[in-house]
Amino acid sequence: MKGTTVPEKVSLTGRFFRYDPDFFFIGEEINQLSMVSVQEAKSLIQSTVPVLYPEQKNLSETVGQVLAEELVSPLALPPFRQSSMDGYAVHHADITRAGTLLPVVAESRAGNATLQTLQRGTAVHTLTGAPIPDGATAVVMKEKVDRTADAAIIQQFPVPDGQNVRSVGQQIQKGDVAMPKSTYLTPGSVGFLLGMNIHSVKVYRKPSVGILVTGDELVQPGDGVALEFGQIYESNSAMLAAVLRSEGIDDVSIRYVADNEAATIQALRELTEQHDMVLSSGGISVGAYDFVGTALREIGVEEVFYKIRQRPGKPLFFGRNDDTIVFALPGNPASTLVCYYEYVLPALRLMSGRTDCFLAKLKLPITHAFSFQGERDEFLKATATTEAVTPLYGQESFVLRSFAIANALIYLPSSQNSVQPGDLVEVHLLPFFF
Ligand code: AMP
Ligand code: MG
Image 1 (tube, rainbow, N blue to C red):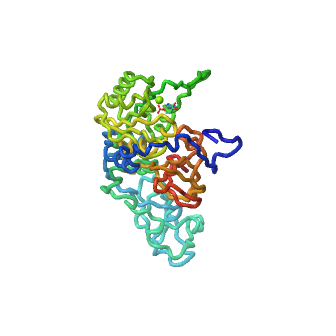
Image 2: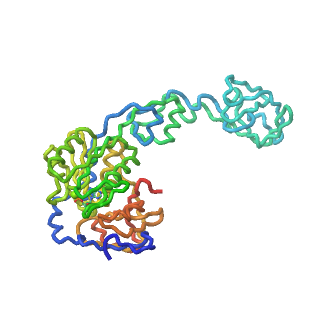
Image 3: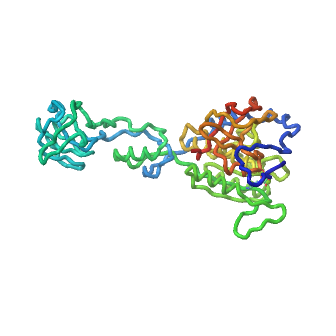
């Protein structure tokens, strides 16, 4: 059985089979020395990638970005003593037994502009979020009170001092650090900061990305676009734009070039001038029509590494041209996407000021046996739950059918080249894992 031929009506999940004629490529080990390991590649990315300049932005548009300044609270929260319940503000010592009767002399509701004062031996009807009258030490919740026309019969005893009272500055004091620099902003952050009237913040910019697609065999998909013999539909650019969009990066431009040296040089020169990051797809192997490597050298991109001891995605190039980061991704779609998640995404996050840049990791038992040979580490498309992980049928680098339903990658270092069901393996969760 070979390639993408999956029997009809059989779920992709839970079935694993590999036959790839390139799998045991005799002579591949000769090349190993010039390659970097997966870990070396990751630390080279961490030490190379610059953080972009910050920008001032409206807070509500910053979710998913990283704070580039420390924020200090301009006020105490809550700004006044606040009730956390609908009920009756009292002096706790006035309640001497269950059934104590107190005349209700006033009401304090949310938004009340004047501060009431509680006379001992009385109660003030006080609602959630409302100022607690001066002199009151507790609020008894409404459910523990019987009402008459003008009195409250308190059925709770004893009433602890401070019950249901939010003190001034209980959440944060004026002048306290509200949020340290480098905090990743979430919807919760927006709510918290707006509560202090902080509505404009300095955040690290997200990179702009230029994508270059190479390949004479590629045809843009569209209504009525038929393939001629030897052609395939081009999908890497839309796939890359999609993963970038899901990371909040929308300043993306895409260019297509033929497998032609001059055109590749010209396009890469322009893209590196215009963008913080350039991703190329295809043309980075050693074929006669692979011009990306030559073009990158020609325009002066400094190589940090070329080729990683991994499968898929061995011929990944990573380099830098002044402030522009360049990844030349292998064109096989599954390689493109593995390289994106394992290396490009972390680089994008580092540029945007994040330090926790890699996919989240779990150790999970694998449901099926898997073994491989050679010196390269393996990334397997998989479906994971919080309990276990299942490698998917179709791990070859041209196969996206498995990736289309994967929510995780299994990372098997070459030292762990034979696993049995139940063995713990390292699982990298894709960003939409849930
Ligand atoms: P390359 O890295 O240029 O040698 O391409 C490797 C394989 O990936 C070839 O089978 C290409 O046809 C395929 N490929 C390259 N670029 C794309 C793309 N943009 N969309 C879909 N398949 C591609
Ligand atoms: Mg090509």
